[in-house]
Image (cartoon, rainbow, N blue to C red; front, side, top):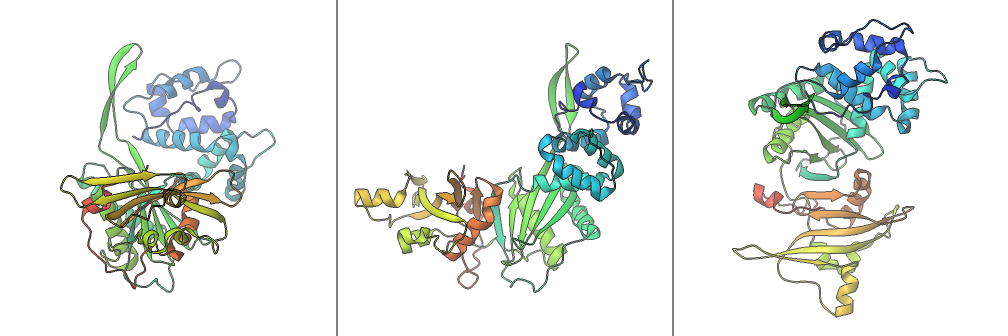
Length: 402
């Protein structure tokens, strides 16, 4: 089962917001587990179910809890907030679910789940793809295809089956699910991969007694395919290098017929900072960004003991001018952080870059605009100049851009 926090749907006042008919139908789909925990579907004199008992059961799930119930409660909990009301109304209209002036977000969400669970799963997946902010990038040496067709459900199922082979072989279970979302305004496709992790045992207190719960955690990873530049950006929560390599190989094979389609070649460089100085931070031709400042620089010097120099400033180039220092000429530029003032934003946000293939952002939605700047200023290595160097795992992940 996945981990989840049922606190919202374990509150009696929230349960009372749901149409009793929808609630009874939903609970009936999980009657075996609920009646086994002592819940009765017999209504009281007022025609109501024992919601206090139901709330107590949901707050204390046991090891044999119905996994479908867990998934439903997890998704309903994340989507049934007041901030999702307009989106839920739109989904209700799409699925033919009737709503009224007294319909609560929780009521609408559950009604949609009963009518079309996949619709609610996809809406939840769209939220999850916007959460990651740190990616490893993998390029293809081939030019961008003239046309890329969004994979249909049959192809996505085949991709999930291929991934399941890897997950099962590493004791992570099966049942992976892959969602794909088109982002035409960015010319990108977002893939969400839901999968399990190795079983985990934790201690718990149940009715005053010490016991344990055994469950399989659930992770959500995100991969972004950039159609214009023919590369992948991979976020995997476990940070396992082998898992990233599997994702790249499977998508290369399933989408382009070649497991080696996306080579782990050099994508980022910080050399424009040395070559152009402050001019490398110019955003005059970038609509949506007011200014960018270098605020941290990591320099690695040749040393058997690992010699790193980290310098921080509110404005690195202004600091050098004040101290009358030249830009560092020795050592390799290992990583950098930038302060980015977006047009219309009150405060600047940060972006981090770590050659050869790592970047992170304060917000996922910042990535596309920052990548535009990186490409125009030469921080993204062009295919013409990329020598497609094979990189070791140590080269890829020795630093962290927090």
